[in-house]
Amino acid sequence: MKINNKVCFIIGLLFPAMLFAQNNNSTTSPYSRFGLGDLQTRSFGRTFAMGGASLGSRNSLQINMANPASYTVVDSLAFLFEFGLNGKLSSYRTNTTKMTANDVNFRYLSMGFRITDRLAASLGLTPYSDVGYDIRINNYLENTGNYGIRYFGDGSLTRSYIGFAINPFKNISVGANLNYLFGNISNNAELYFDALTDDWYNNDFYNTRKNEYIRVSQFGFDFGLQATIPLVKNQSITLGAVLENKPEYAAYRSDMMLKNLTVIPNPDDPEPKSDQDTLKYNGEEKGSIRFPFTYGIGVSYVKTDVLELNLDYYHQSWSEATFFGSINPVLTDLNKFAVGAEWIPNKNSIRSYSQRIAYRAGFKYEESYLKLNGRQINDFGISFGIGLPISRSYSTINVAAEIGKRGTRNADLISERYVKLNLNVNLHDIWFLQTRYD
Image 1 (cartoon, rainbow, N blue to C red):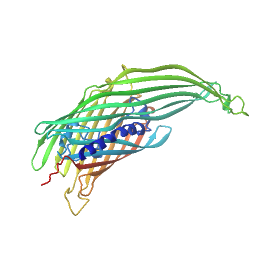
Image 2 (image 1 turned 30 degrees about the vertical axis):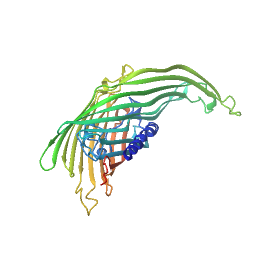
Image 3 (image 1 turned 90 degrees about the vertical axis):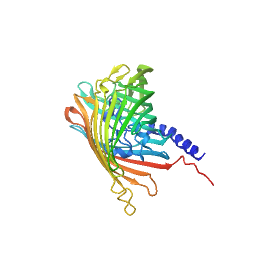
Image 4 (image 1 turned 90 degrees about the horizontal axis):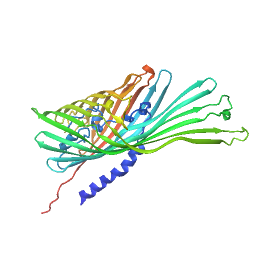
């Protein structure tokens, strides 16, 4: 009964978390205007500090959603519960302007546990992509005056998942995630005019605005495999692979175009008069978004409770993805390389807490899925962090930071320098123990 109450309580957390995730995640990146926005990593708290390299990682005290085959590493009596927060400070520069922005977001909520000796499961909630931008371009046209173009949008796509993994043979694990992708994205554009004179109330040009909304709601699958090769003296090498074969998600799109004129006929009587009309309206229509073929391979070297080294390669064929039957011309194939390491001086030290801390570092290089003005938008980051063990427990608090650069100022594009801070809490509990009385 105690276990059932815990399960009901934790699963009950997922429903408000879905609403919180959908409405809380945000970004201020101008690059989120394109495609599905800023794509989010699948790496959880521990491997975030290791450059995100995680496809071959198997750690019995941490959940690794990036490869569902890893779920079987959880101890048979353990129940893991994780959640994470992320903060980001960015500095954007073009050849003429610069700005700074910051965001704080919920990152994920997840849990993992064993079902039988060979079967394990995990379920949780994590963001897939975030949209949030507001870009204004001012210009002047002869005989018309000043005018501006504004591009703005917001929204996010969220992934909830339940995954299972099994050990069909010794040192072999295979797994799969059933994903439910949902969320809304809004992309808008506006053309507006200033007056020909300083008396702005004399403006008689109509402003035009276009709103487009996309809603996604559908199930999909991804698969994982891990094979471990034991070495001498508590050492091993694990090879990992993941695959997602062009999942197609139901999507709904609607758009509307408006014209609007606001004037003050008499400056002594500043009561605005509005003239608004709908130029075009297309109600919500059902279509689909075919996501890219995705695969990743990774290798992990482990010396138990001392050292872990990870190396990953990840690929997504976004150039072949279709949005309501069409290929997006600004999307290209994504390639990501990541390397990470974890070192624990003495995990079982009694006298020194600092000896029990896990020290982590890594780096990543990503050729993103955006190609603008003939240039692919690349992202390079260096990460580091620590895992702080909680006294008298297998639980840990993971703190990590990433410093990086994305984009370029060449070809009239935008360069972004950023610092990300990540806080992850991993709670470990002993479940499934049956108490006996003599």
